[in-house]
Image (tube, rainbow, N blue to C red; front, top):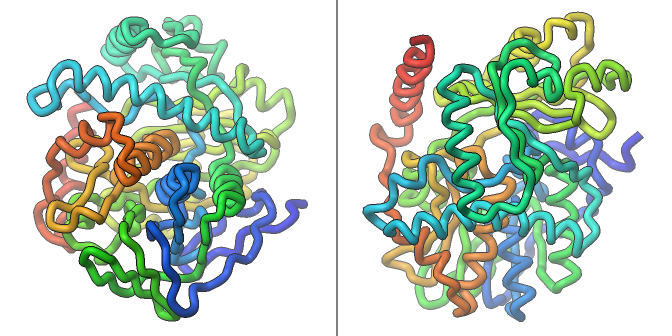
Length: 435
C-alpha cells in the first residue's frame, strides 16, 4: 500500500499517481503578511523549478499553491520526458533568426538534462526510466522521423537514436498499428507527481516557503507587488505566474493566450511480466503522430498507462474509462479482459503557435510568467524555471530573451468561444489525416 495518497480537491479526479505517491506533508495555509524577494504563484513544475533556481541563487522565495503541490498538470500528466520545447521551431526564424532557432532546439535538449540532473542531485525517487519511441501512423510520419534524426545529429545529440521500419516495430510495441518509429534513448518516462513532491521537498531545504490551499484572490501591481489570498498576503519585489492552464482570470492578458485543453489517462490493473513485455518489450514510453494522439507507457508496477484524446471543447467525458478503453483496445485488442483501475484527466495549456510562452509583462516589468507548454511540459517547465531565474537574478544567458521575443496571439472568441472555435480547427486537421 502507498504510504499516503494525495488528497484530491473536490474537482480533482484521483489518479494512479495520487494513489501511489510519496508521502506528502501537510503544508501551511498562508496567514498574515510575509515578505520575499520573489513571490511565485503555482505549485507545479514551473513554479517549483523557478523557486528552486532562485533559492540556489540566494533569493528569498514564497510559493503559493491554490490546492496541493502537483495538483494540476504536473501531477496528472502522462509522465513522458521527451526532448524538445515546441513544434515547428523553424517558423520563428523571421523573429529570432537562424541562430536563435538553433539555440532553441539546443535548449530543447538541455531541458531533459535539467530534469536528469535535478533527480540525481536531490535523489528523487520517481521511477525515471530511459527510452522513448515516436510511432509512425503513416509513411509520411517516418519521412519526418528521418529528418528529425538527421537534425539531432547536426545538433550534436549524444544519445542513441534509431529509425525503425514496420517489420522492426515488434521490438518496441506489441501492436501491428504502426508503420515505423524513431527510438530516442535520451528521452524516457517517470512518475510526475513524485518528481514534483521531491522538488518541493528540495525547495524547502533551500529555504523556499511553500503554502498550499492558498489561492490568489487579487494582485496589486507596482514596483512592489502585493499578492493577496483569503488569509494573507505576500509582498515581493518580483512576481512569477506559473499557473498555465489553471491561470483562469488571475491575469486576463496572459489567460487569453493559453487554451486549457483536456487530456485523459486510464491505468490498467497490474499486468504480469509476460503481459507487460508483450505490450512494450523495452519498457519505453511511446507516442503516435495523430492530432488526437495516443501516448502510453508502463508504470513501475507494470500497469499500462494509456492516455490521449486531447479535448479542445472544454467538456470532459462523463466516463473517462468508457471513452478511453476503446482507444486502448484499438492498439492492444489482447487487453479486452484486463480491468481498468484508475481513470483521470486534467488540463494542459496550449498556445496558438505551440511554443512555450516565457517572458514578462510589458507594462509590469517585475512580473514574469511561463505557460502553454503544449504537451512538452515535463521538460520545458524545468527549462522555463532556469530561464526565469536567470532573468530575475540578472544572470541572462540569452535564452530568456529568445523566448520573450516571440509574439503570442490572444485566442479569438473570448473566454467562452475560443475553445469551440479551436475544436473546429482541430476537427479540420483530424479530417485531413484521413486523406
